[in-house]
Amino acid sequence: MKIALIGASGFIGSALLDEALARGHQVTALVTRPERLPTRDGLVVKQSDALDTTALAEQLSGADVVLSAFSGHAQEDVYDYYVRGFDSILAATQSADVPRLLVVGGAATLEVAPGQLLLNSAGFPDEYRATAEGAKTALERLRTQQTQQWTMLSPAAEIFPGERTGQFRLSGDLLLSDAEGNSRISVQDYAVAMLDELETPNHTNQRFSVAY
Image 1 (cartoon, one colour):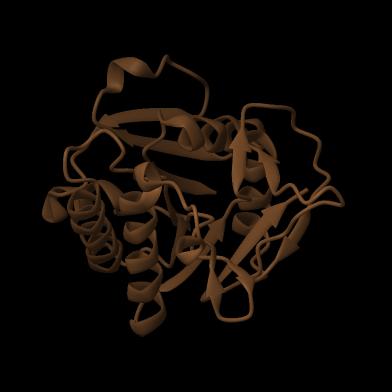
Image 2 (cartoon, helix red, strand yellow):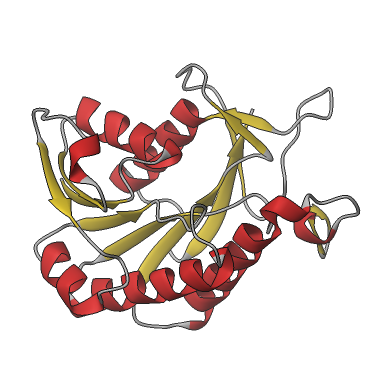
């Protein structure tokens, strides 16, 4: 499958890249700094600006699926940058007539109880709030538009460098926790869940989540 991967050099994006290449997909990595990614079989690396919708649409043309790990973590105004970037990615995907858009979401929009988001829980860290609000807006955008087929995958509350086990649970809008009350997933297993969905769609036009 031809995958256009936005943000392929980031924490989650690099795990998605590794998993996609290991499965034999052809990946075009769209990144701001191409020098960060070495040459690999099945990989084409292109310098890209997610906020340049017209240029991005040209780069997405011909892809079977767009996989977005776009992030605004390094920007001064995280929320504004993320939302503008996401809106551009959605518009470019539509303009390029790419059938599917898969998006890396956040855990903060998951429910800890019916109708109660993790984002609104007492003690939610302020340093993650702008990113969380951006992901919330992106999810709302996806749910209200009617033209682009999409899927968003939210990780557990803690996502960390670990092992690829292939053993995890999937849920919908509920934040999953283990028997000790911990909500965790390795970035490698997050990538497995995302590529499983890419290859065999089971959550079309839905958000779902993954955790141990």
